Image (cartoon, rainbow, N blue to C red; front, top):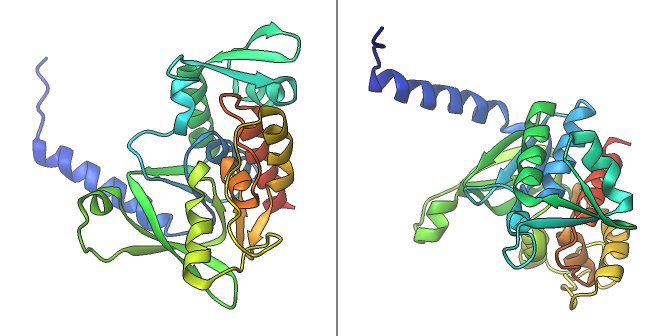
Length: 257
């Protein structure tokens, strides 16, 4: 039987349903900026705990650099301490040798994304953060614009989204933290108040420090994933991803306790 399809109904369905979602999430418990591994797993655990969670991702795809594994070899390495998270969400792991586990990067990102969404987090891609809202010395929301607006260098005014907490999970660039220092000066909760910057690669130290650095970096604003090491001046860790998951989990725990 031939189906009758109307292009206007298709268009109306997309616009109406997207608009409903977007309006609903203009206010949330937690707004996570960046849908890399740390942001996705943070969203998963927060939503699982009953929080209303929105994740804004500037790119078309989620997952950050995890898709490419190491140097576009699409395998990911995880250490023993993070395996329980992979097991919980259903990512297949292969034991390479004692303490080292391998996953397929495409499967890993796909499962991370699906797990966050199924837990209740809402992801909006192609949206960038260009500013924050601060009230009484506390971050209370973020300022949004389409990523294409920034790429085209158009002068188009943004919109805003209010949240009780914001998580900077933007990776190496730590974009939200940089906005803070750029707008109001050295007010971060670092030893100097400034953005300290990422140090050269040292996997062992980077993975150790990432949990220590996953914390509130300004009232109402938390850092997770590589953003936390960039804020506090710790090394990057390269293509091992356990710290990303553990950091996202820790940020979620800090916000919910």
